[in-house]
Image (tube, rainbow, N blue to C red; front, side):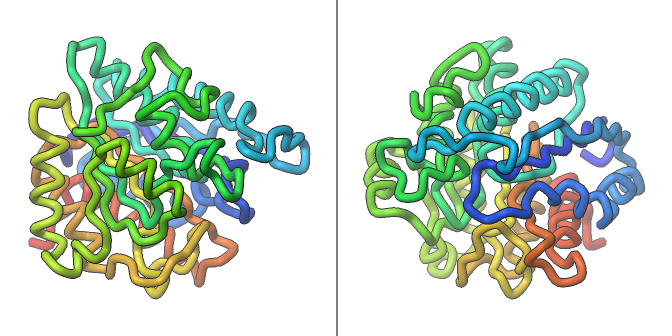
Length: 304
């Protein structure tokens, strides 16, 4: 992994959430030195810069059940094309967010690229939230709570129709890890979809190493590899205060690194999303520094 070609893709998107600021996440990660530190590990890093994304002040909300979904879909389509290009060139895309709605484009591209080879991908969705609401179940209308639903199903249609196929990914090859904050109707969605879920209770009970061993076996077996979509709010606010939707009781520092270290050890990583970093709520760029360190661990940084 250390010798991989890497494309860094910034997505300053914050139309999907109810709190402003995650559009500055890509800048915060670059200030934390993500490009330079990946290069120091031996990766060949090409920073593709930031996609253009509109801000809420210049747009109309339109549908309160899926706010700004057309504008979000347009950004996701641009990201889809860049992630697809990275895969075609043999590079590993690292997507810097931005809110988690961008995964409809990034994960969708990884899945469609694998499909051209006759393969499915596995997905590790590391998050405090399930992101499996639809316009019919949402309480907020915030689209960053819907991308996994779009990848697994048909709603919201503006996101699910990006690319060449729908659905994009298989529920039995999708694993949610670190979940601890779900809407009531979303719980039904998750159960009905039959995705694999490891909540924080499972992590507390069995330990992060055992959970990750099982998750990697599920997502990695008989697939082209794993797309890791990592929402930094999976970490406890004590170590990651600067996130879009903080929730107490998350991964601690070593648990978060163990997730990434075991992904690196699996040698199955196809792409990485780092999303929902909000510098407005941060303390001296602490959360972006953590995100950078976690990316390094996913790419094979070792303690010794």
